[in-house]
Amino acid sequence: MFALSRSVYVTLCKRSASQAAGQRLDISGIYPPIATPFTKQEELDYHKLEENLQKYAKIPFKGLVVQGSNGEYPYLTEEERVEVVSRVRLSLPRDKLVIAGSGCESTRATVRMTERMAGVGADAVLVVTPCFYKGKMDSRALTHHFTQVADSSPVPVVLYSVPANTGLELPMDAVCRLAQHPNIVGLKDSGGDITRIGLAVHKTRGLDFQVLAGSAGFLMAAYSVGAVGGVCALANVLGHQVCELERLCVEGRWEEARELQWRLIEPNAAVTRKLGVPALKQAMEWFGFHGGACRSPLQPITESESQQLRRDFSSNGWL
Image 1 (cartoon, rainbow, N blue to C red):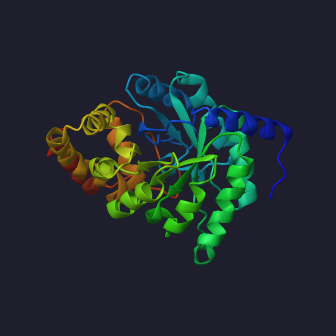
Image 2: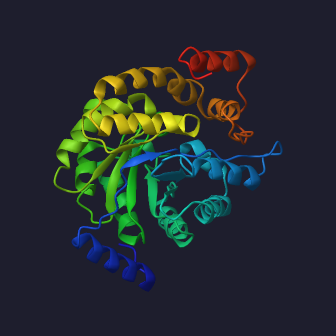
Image 3: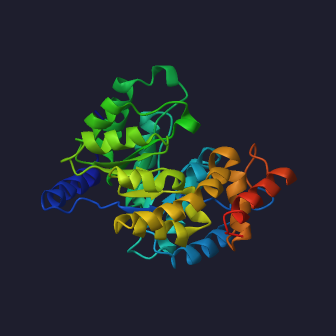
């Protein structure tokens, strides 16, 4: 067990009291995992970031996820990661949540990063599964990792399972154990397995544990089995539309929701599993946001990929 600093201990005591009073952090709603704009020289472009933030503040998001997978966090230094979160928090209205990606490969580094993210104003942290030694990342190792992080974190922790990037899923037995931790408030599941999302909701009922869909492509299906929101790359581009899908699901207007969900599937796939972050950044440019360059080794999409990307949006009525 890590030793807690006095400030962390006081914060956790205050949080325990607020949770006992029924004030556990509500993370329901839609969040874009924002992209990190870079210049052509691959330097952070804070001016373009600020312009994006001003536009996102006008969309009914619950908040923003900063330094998630779409923020290219593995390619940023520790100082850059913290600085981006700091600037987002300073720019964003206080009623919008900032969930900061703080995951690192080691538990020690994740604890440190988590404390730094909280120190610059993050309301919660999103902690991805360590994956370099994926063969050893079983339930025991991952439960220990997330428990240590949550024990030390000054802010609530959201678990993050993204097998497309890490090559492993957070095991369900680990999710169920971790959901009992007073400082772990939810799970972002990007795997796309609706039976797993439904099982996570079912197995953690009564624990005030919240499940977020990790993609707009299965957002309606996730809501139908009990998810309370989504962290959706496509919301960087079609933010109003993803929020509208959320509203239709919450209001139980399933026929209208289904029609909208159909039109989001192909664009969502294009900017996620098919073409990834470079395509997301290109689409952002088409829709009036600043995507900017990617940081190497990520490369821009090719001309043929750009044409396919445009077809995926235009054939569904978005361009």
